[in-house]
Each structure stands twice: as structure tokens, then as C-alpha cells.
Image 1 (tube, one colour):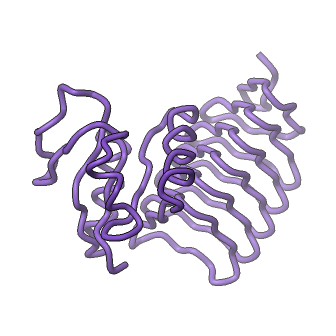
Image 2 (cartoon, helix red, strand yellow):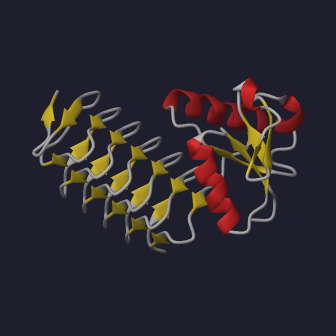
Length: 210
């Protein structure tokens, strides 16, 4: 990656992304965050420069810098991504940890966080702007929609499908062929053995609706 990166969000997720780019020898230009208490502060020698809608910094994206949106809240992340697309005509880049294993036969979209020791196996499809925390396993022929968040150590087995905006808690196991509906939530440590309807929340082993 030739251009430096502006990271939108200086919270915990932003710090993870900073570490990933540092490991990959990608220069981070700075953070943008709407928490004014953070403005001017340094995180590992990288300064929080201003708000996420600061035109003086937005105007250089796509020309002199790239962008990554490190906001955990899906609504906030979508808002910033749409702003970047509409105002700057750019898509955020991927942040892939140097210990992650991504098959050359997998299909990966834009703006994804793929954290340490995550494995994405052949013929898996990952959409845009997803967050995959450490040691996630995405097995063969799995489909992951846009804006999906998957907690550390979760296992998404072969042929499973996770629709847009779904949340999979840390350590959860999605059995092969299971479908998790749009904006559904799977609690940490759950074992999902049947399809989960969109918008619902399940928890337990086996996972049940709550």
C-alpha cells in the first residue's frame, strides 16, 4: 500500500487496526474521532487529528491517503463509509493482520478487519466492512455478508451463511450449512445448530432464541 492511512475511530478497534498497519509497514497518517477529548492526543505516536467529518482531512482521501473505518457500532460505521463513498468516491481499504491466513481462492470485499491468526479458507466469500477478531475460522464455501461482526475464536463452519449486519459472539460455533439472518445476534460461546431468523437473538448450547 503506497499511500498512508487515516483511521476513523480512535477506540479499541482503532488501536487494533493501527497495530495491523504497523506490522505491515503501512504508515498511518492519523486518527479521526468525534470524541473531542481525544483530539490532539497521541496513540503510539499517532495523533488524533480531528472529527470524522473534518473537510481538511477528508479532502486528501483518495489522493494522498487511504481510509479505514474502525467504528464498532454498525450505524456509525455505515454512516462514515457512505460519506466516504458519496463525498470522496473511495472505498476503505482492508486491514489484514500479518499472521492471518487468507486463501487465494477466497473472495474478500473492502474495508474488512481481519485480526491476528484468523483463517479464511478456500472459496469462502466475505463482503464489505466486516470485523473478524482474533483467531476466527471462516471455513470453506462460507458466505459472510456486509457489516458482519465476528468475535474472537468463533468458528463459522463450511457452507454456513451469515447475512448483513449479524453479530457472532466470541467463541460461538456455527454448524455447517446454518444460516444466520440479517441483523441477528448470536451470544458468546453459543453452538448454533439451526437457522437463526433475521433480527433475533440466540444463546446457549444448543442456541435458543431469547
